[in-house]
Picture (cartoon, rainbow, N blue to C red):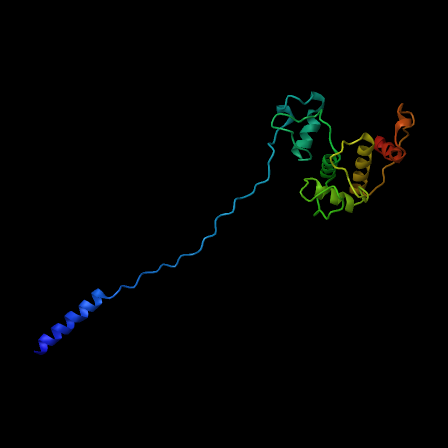
Amino acid sequence: KIEKIEKIEKTESVAKTESAPKAEKTEKVEKVEPAKPEVKPEVKPEVKPTEIQTVPSWAKAEIDYVLENKIMEVASENDFAGNNKINRGEFMMAMLKASGITPSDYRGSFADVTSLDKFSGYLQSAFDQGVIAAADNFYPARELTRDEMCKIIVTSIEAMTKKEISKSAISHFTDYSNIQSWAIDFISQAVST
């Protein structure tokens, strides 16, 4: 009788275990954030002017220097665009790169320049170092005049060397009377360099 009871108890225990709901296995799943797309800056191809058909032979060495030192970029893969006009923002950036002046964080020094403009950090450095003066606007997209070019060249060199450039006589230029008065000293200094 005892054996029979033990057998019944064992059978009931097995039946209960088999009919009992089984515990589900739970796996710990880590929450994975979707990968953010990597934003890569636009990289212009490194091209030597000797590979560009539009570069005149007399300018190859200088343009090679400018491109190799990343002072300026090619317009497209096979074109330096040496006959294109340059604007004030582009020239300022190139001149400061050539002078070894590094860009600063742009702090909104000019109403017509934003931190998204590729030259904004260079304009900030130029402003901070006295290469350009305070003004409401810089007019970066405006075409550069030769008067303005001379001022930028002279002030950039003086900022880099911490020395004033001497002046040369320019009154013999046939267009001397057309030079704006504010530019006379800068042009005479640029001629002497």
